[in-house]
Image (cartoon, rainbow, N blue to C red; front, top):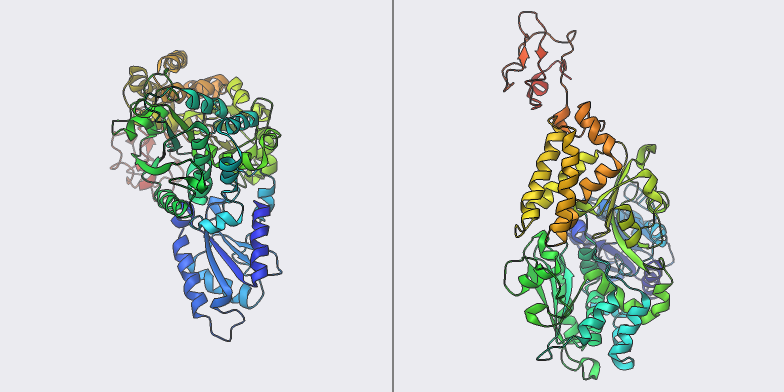
Length: 608
């Protein structure tokens, strides 16, 4: 990405033009990016004719996500002959100061200038799918072409046979980046060789990610839709697909808009449609907006959705590469996988296989959160460990605190201890530790996090998102959630832990699809690595992280109580006695339901 940014800067220097880019990814827009962009347009147009730089010398550009979403709105300023300057958390009212101080006056507007060099941080990553994020205009095909876009498609269609492409992808070691980690080239081979009674084969982008901790597919589709499209067309040629579909969520409005724009532009430039680039290969692609359901990302449920059915998963085999969409061979990979294909074709299988581990080649984009200095989207070599990423790339745990736990895989993931931070972030290493990569997210927490509180959130999400087709998931997840509620609210019993263990193990092996199988990972790994925390919640009725409000204990500081009686009336259970006639209030914790009403009513801070 740094090389691409330098190329963009060099291009602007040749033109003698100041280049300003504004992040208009979903996070950028959510933070007011469109208002910032319009204010730049307004202020540049309003600059007087005798200004050092007039509107004809300033060019504006929107860009996608570079990964540091918590710092949006991000703005880059490229001035010929000078180093790029990044401004963070930019508001519309800052725009005039950036223009007057920096562009006209030649002095950086320090109030908004980023303290950290994000491009230096990006150098520590291995950018492939995110290579152009934050660099080029995602709605301009010419900018993609200028950085080498569609060269891989030309190479594939005019210089390689379909079998050669499949072999190259197999040789690269590319594995699906949507969670399962299946060897991509082998899926392609099966889809290409599976019999089809009418010769029809489908190829699909799975751009549906319902895991609230993951958003890499969305960012790839928003930040460089042409890269996803190019990879998909190459894959279609490699397996002989006759129709392509990009399936994404209807709430990914920006991604949907830019994908449709990319399809129109690609048709206009001859990269899509009939006789692509003058060859015999033809294919067209459309965008399908699915319902906003977590289960919609499961491959068989996704295809049912495209067919106009309720997104229920189906048992496999047969696999979709043999009998998929409308009964035809169907190849499905997620957006990040497709965005990786052009680079493999351009640079070769050996280049990609040179990264990662023997069993997990290449790199993977992770959505990283928690108590870290740097978080967001980061594309990382598969051979790195959690500790390396946390300390070297994410800047370590903030406030000089210590790492307590790592939550891997979001709501379908599990927990790892500090001691497990040295395992590699590849598929097999994670499986051996009892967790799944899933859609590749992890959160690193200090002692302010509670395993049970995190597990409750994950289980509650999965309980609400189950399709209800199979009993283990429909009933079992509710039973688990209820047990976790009991433990976090002081009603837990020690025998509940063994019951939870048995219930999770049963659901793990009997659920119809991956949702039920993975939903219980948070409890299984929690019991495996953090059982003492569960026991402390039950035996001592204490949550050391103070996250489980049901275990709060209220008491009255008698020396501070003025016996005004204000706490008595709002208590719904009559747990408070005294509090009048110069007698300090007393709270009976056997009756208290931890509603916090007494604390809020006390004006003298006598209740803790």
